[in-house]
Image (cartoon, rainbow, N blue to C red):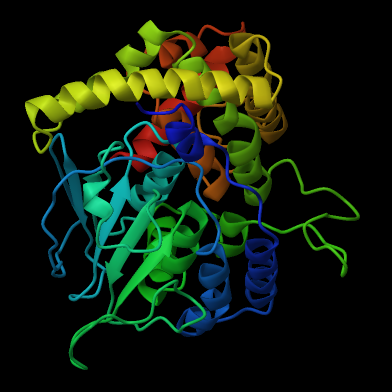
Length: 395
């Protein structure tokens, strides 16, 4: 019988690691020094490596998908079916390809996908079976999601990826693996073409967004324990503050709200019937056994975090972005509305916007997602922001 800890291990929030923080400090310093696009490969090298050691909160299940190489195209295109999503990019190197292993309702998978879509990173999303994890059999020492396996002509150093090159020929592009949401994002920021693509998007849209604002600042830390910030807190609009909020405040409340009862948990797993690579028996076993395990796991999360009323707690946590969006709107212009602003305080989202949006995007189509928009009298502000994010990310 499946123990409730089966999915709890895959649903617990990731612990904040000191190493990615240090890596972002280095990243920020290089940005402030005016590093050129060609030198960015070294900027984020340490970040991707360190973050790859962090453990994501959620694990998922499997889906069979064929690996493919992407060729350069003249436009960004996205094709979707129930089991995989493939996105190609005009600026990606011809030999670049990436498999993204996910669990459909995992907030950390979805916040990573928000970045991939926004930055127009070529990828194929592969749904993982939470009971067998058959799609992850190739990974011997790590069986969690999100995880990405990329073939890239830009060889990542041993400090920027969790695995060394697995290519069998010196003429083949090396394969690297990034483990966890932060590791994937930071690893991709190591690629020059990704940074150039972001800058191209902002320039084309006449956006004042910069790489510095997009990545965000990192709070100063002590020498003894760099996991504890000292001095001033991060600015309310800073990208890293909102990434932290998505990881530590928002995501922890999503599963208790998604699965408050066994019936709601069963309803949340309805998506498995849309995945053709799952057999009829796999679909029903995942939905029955998985929903029971998820319900028990969500109950344990509530006890661990001392959550008495999950709906009230979620409503309270959502007040933070509502207040920030309202504040940005009122300070932007006395005659303007909040129709164009994001958590960044600009008319273009940053990593924090993408993290918060992605976490919420993972529960779209469920009752709790619809209930969010009526959680308070000011929830319309949040819904307007969410719709603006959809236009930026999903288009």
